[in-house]
Amino acid sequence: MNREWIIVQRLVNALDDSRSSYGKGAGKVADPRLRDLLEGIAGTHWRIADDLAGQIVETGDKVARQGNRLGLLRTFLAEKFAQISVDIDMAYASHAHKREADILRDFHAAVASIRDAGLCNRLRMGCRELERASMEISCLRTTMQLRTNPRATRAPVAVHVPTRAATSQTVARNGQHSNA
Image (cartoon, rainbow, N blue to C red):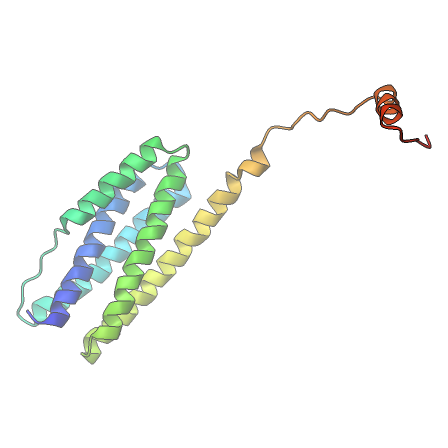
């Protein structure tokens, strides 16, 4: 297996790991829009990984589709973070947002380092699909943040307003005159 196919194998592993993580997360969120988006992105990752794996197989090399240990650790940490989080949906949306950014960074690096025109073209097409998915999760995450903005849901604060008698006593003590 040459260097380019090793890079592609790593991308396939990353896509398989995130697909598995999103599939598990989709079953644990309450927001139907987030659930649908996670399932949709998982499907996108499956299609891209399947296409790249097919490219590897066409050259006569073998491809592993089980992901890697780091992906299992990321999934485990995302689940634990969601369990201790105040907003489970927001925790999963934040995890997906960060994971999509990492995968996009890897895809951009792969496009820059691979010389094979056909493979580079497929990576660019996958990159476009991932950019669209990243934008969708980013927009939904922003909407969710606005919905759960602590400033908007903060309880009203009781403000102490001094009476006129208390104000005039304070002014008299300080030696200032009021025109009231």
